[in-house]
View 1 (cartoon, rainbow, N blue to C red):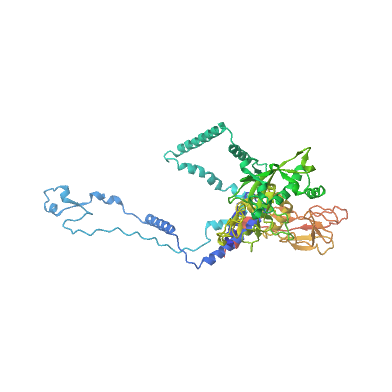
View 2: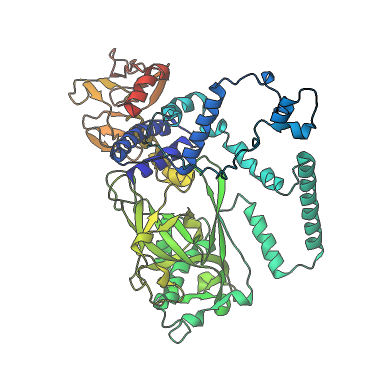
Length: 623
């Protein structure tokens, strides 16, 4: 499992479409780990006797036979007559030299049966020999493994791998390959062109027919979904359709309603109105700060029981579209579909903070969507009236069952999760769709089985009878999902920008091939003088506390921050400013006292990629 995890991590880093120095350093480190795991796998599997596959043995023997035939010298065929003319005279023709017997009587084939010869037994066909499969051991002496160590340096030279990979061409070649199956292959290019023209004519005919029909509710919904899929500006899309067939009445969740005995509906009405109250106030008072919201609700004595829904109903939907910004600052879309595997979402955990001190050890929350709704929400009170009429706001909300994250036991395992029991308080709640980051990939732990095998659902709405005991959180489902767990390294994930500088410096400092020691000269302070090795964790490397801007304030009154400068293959740390005087990056004095306050410099002898290539390959894949 460790090897599979490292392979997935290496593949995710190597195929990123936006690379930074930090991600390349991570790729170098992961490549070394991958080499260790591959060698370990080779050593562990060495005692196991393994042979070729039958197909591999057949191909090998065919190749060897072809090579043997090409090496064997053949006799000159012109010295022998053609096979059909090889005949000899019969005994009668030899005794009568003056006479000529008919050709058919006097000549017999050389390779045919001789006169007066005994008939031979019938020759049976030779039995087909089974290919002898040779022993085959797992080895690393192939170009595939040799090329792994070149990825980091090639990315530095030529850019991300998608710029020169053949994957794009192969991907777009799939469509004409599928068209080729519908041709006779005699006039391939002509028939492919004809097929493409037919597809275009059918597409235009379909559009013409549909546009001429009277618009129905279903057609309008499809058209609305299509427009939403092409709109990159919105955060999410939920249909605004209010058909009676999709309406759910509030009375069904009352104590005498249809769902009165459902465990997840005992506090449904209260939970819903408590969720909608602050959102109604926010919609009624746009521009209000989140910190002032609770104060307004308290001062105006707003109560959840006064929240009302127009018509005492809300409307259910099956599909929600989520737009999000990927790690490379592009827009993408996820679709949430109820009652399918695409019903899981992820949100930021408000209790999580990057660093050693955090009330939560996982940055995200995960939920299973069991309802997608929208309603026209009002309030019975002064804030909810426009004269004598009520003011209603269309609000969208999700009904979610929560997963409980289970941290991995080591750094080479996927995180796990389990659905909270439906009877537990806080196992389900309502969520603002605007808080959703994107859909997530939750994979059941099939080996552990269902949580309630053979038992009916306790909740018809939550369908808890389909719950598995444990789930895996797949962080390798795509590149963007992988980068969400590499906190602070993705340009497009703006919620991590406040920690990006510290995180990037922390990772770059791990690259021993690029960084040396930090030399610091300052005033007469033992805590600043001397040589410091660049730390692995820049959050905890200096004596003192970190302020809100990420700068480190030393006990001696010395404040500085790290910066990176490229110096023809080497790097330097430049310190910012101090309380004893401002100075530039060269350590010049600006306070007029004639002395330099401090000077910092990193003298790094950085080897070029070519000179370190053999050493890196030996470290990664050599014995």
